[in-house]
Amino acid sequence: MSADQRAADAFGVHLCPVVAAVTAQNSRAVARVEPVRPELLGAQLAALEDDLPPHAVKTGLLGSAALIEVVARWIDRLRSRRPVALVVDPVFAASTGASFADENARRAYRELLLPRADLVTPNRREAEALAGTALAAPALAAELRSLGAGAVCVTGGDDAGEGALALDWVDTDHARGWLALPRIDTAHTHGTGCTFATSAAAALALDFAAADALVLAKMATAGALQRGYRAGQGAGPVRASTGFAGDPRLLPSMSFDAVPPQPPAARTVVSGQAQLYAIVDRAALVRAVVAAGVKIVQLRIKQAEQAQLREQIRASVEECRAGGARLFVNDYWQLAKEAGADGVHLGQEDLAALGPDGRRSLADSGLALGVSSHCLWELARATALAPEYIACGPVWPTATKAMPWREQGLGNLAWWCAIAPRPVAAIGGILTAEQARAAASCGARYVCMLRAIAEHPHAAVPPVLDALRAVSADLPIAVPELPSTSILSKTRSA
Image 1 (cartoon, rainbow, N blue to C red):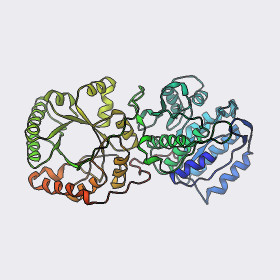
Image 2 (image 1 turned 120 degrees about the vertical axis):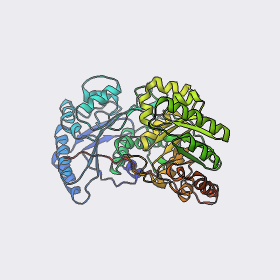
Image 3 (image 1 turned 180 degrees about the vertical axis):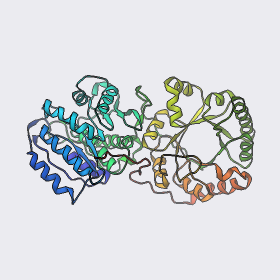
Image 4 (image 1 turned 30 degrees about the vertical axis):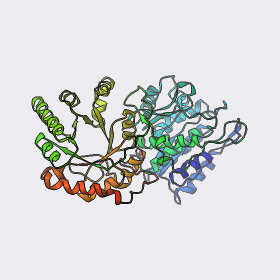
């Protein structure tokens, strides 16, 4: 519970500890476990129901099937009044070997808690105990989801023999893949699982979707491990604290598939004035924006015949070369390579559709890569690719295309710029020179504009370039301690 409290404090949420079992333990061993009576557990939950109704509930050590039944009833009761996220951390045994759950308790987990859980966070051994079989982490997560869990993260931080990366397998509605950070060499790991699960629950309470909540939980837990300290003669406790989300070293990379990602690349900081990044849909506009002074252009053509695409890309490459500008092509990376373009911009769905071989061929093409990101797990995936830039959007509401994401706002853009390992391109709803200047004040290296400059580039571009040159006189936009959610979580109803 000490670890739970520190994790909740790190997220700025209020924790109400409910005692399900009393343990006699120290840093070396658990000497005794005594579950509380079911009536006492129910009385604690009843005391909180009206005064402090929860946004999220995280379970830890539940020492009997009877206590699991109490929790399941109370989740249904609480959800009859308002949405409540449930995170199940199935604590079955201590790292020293003490057992906390018999087969009846494990069956109750499977039958009563998994179907109600928004997220389950077992380590590999706990996942095998729940699934009743030994499988690889991706298959274990799929099995637990088939039993009713809304999302699963099979944590791997305690698999010390698995290599230099601490890998957690994530299986959610939004994303599946490995979350990866370099393994932290420390003997002080007491409370790691509690920290991870409570961090995820805190993020769900703040309305983050499960995939994003797990990115934040990974960051918070890595920070807690870095701050672990000796207390006693065994493994000392981890220590979660505020500020973890502002440390770029704690941002994990995320894979597109079951192949573990590369470790996060070292952060690249690019100095100098922010650049206007013009996005246009034909070669004639490429010529116009380059003539107006733009030095980086994206050609975005959504539908066209192959021959027309090839000709538009070829002509755009020539216009950029003549004007000393760089050309990125949206989507069509093979044609971009063939025509000699400088780079390609791809969305996350397009990158996923390429498959491992396609992404490998793209990486070998020599093209500079720009990647879209709209939420934390997409930022983690972009991180794994080590692109030239990572786009953050939409900064403001945009009518260019329908999007399932909330606008990021300047706060999230500033956080992206501070945390991303590559330069950031601000995109979405940037219609005026003042908005371009504000986006650059967040630290964006590129400021993307579409409609605002497409009609009359010669008139529209110069004021934006002047605004970007003036950014050096502005105070930087403050970076928030935590980002805000851009995808709403969906907790389970009763």
